[in-house]
Image 1: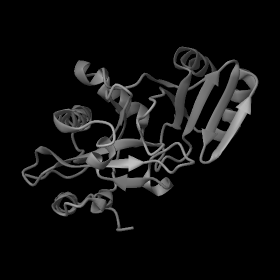
Image 2: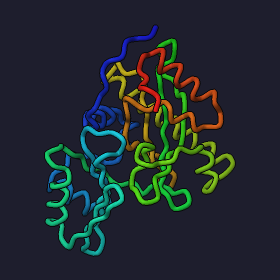
Image 3: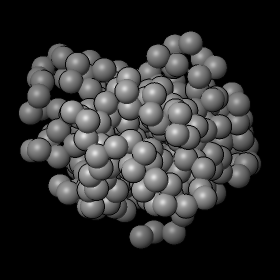
Image 4: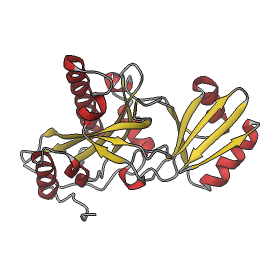
Length: 254
């Protein structure tokens, strides 16, 4: 039986805390903290590259990639990159840019690239017509060549996962990586639904590092179902949209 949907979970921080409750999923979540001067400085010192993002935000708006190298600090948002000679001047600029919005700082994952462009993977997990969780779609998202986010609404390009991975791996290894991605998305959705049982459609954004290790970058509880129309296999978007319509969680077509 289909249950009624509760409202969207907007807070990335609350979603992260829900994932960290599960010991298996916790290993796939990059270190994430509430951003302030102390946490940003310590994580930059530890990882050299981090992402800072609004606690509540969509389409990659407001996301910044922050780096430290040889005493020089930089951050990029959109297509603009800024450089600073000290952490203090970097942090002042970030504060001006973010205004009063609460932000998170997350360990930066150096994503795999396709033709020089970063990509991640969107795994769609939905409650099916019997009300149980099902992985219904998987698609790659390639960043705009001059931007740091992969979101379609920020200029990212949806692509077949196999097309992206075929340039890096092949054969059985490729299939294993695809299965690992699907399993990570499915498991993360189920874990999140333990804390928020009214959810019925979750888009898991998963990055792969140089060792092909999956990292759960973010879970979207109001994901765009139309992105799967870019797949060759049209059965996938038909199923995604059928479930979304049945559960009355479908946004207007764009």
